[in-house]
Image 1 (cartoon, rainbow, N blue to C red):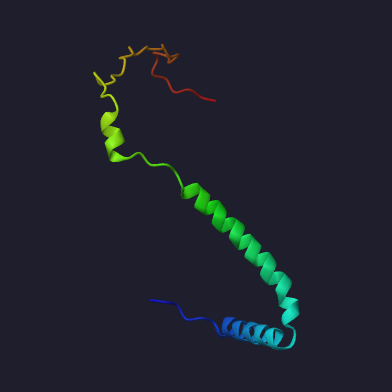
Image 2 (cartoon, rainbow, N blue to C red):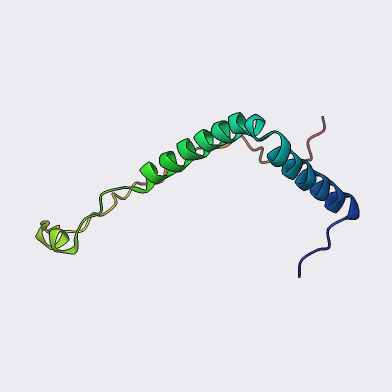
Length: 96
């Protein structure tokens, strides 16, 4: 369920829209530079993200030609080492 927009936010959006329309009607040349800069930023971001997604994928028939592993990899068993602690055998509480 969408939340209601506050009246202040709606007023700011309406004023921004009116200012944009006024700018387009009376001073269209002033909007040319910001549109070009924002367009260049958007294009650079778009092409950068497009380049990241283009990764070569292995075709299914190429996977079948790969040699199969003869035996599965196993872990070496490591023996546990017991380190002697310094605990006292006296069951007396230690005071600081």
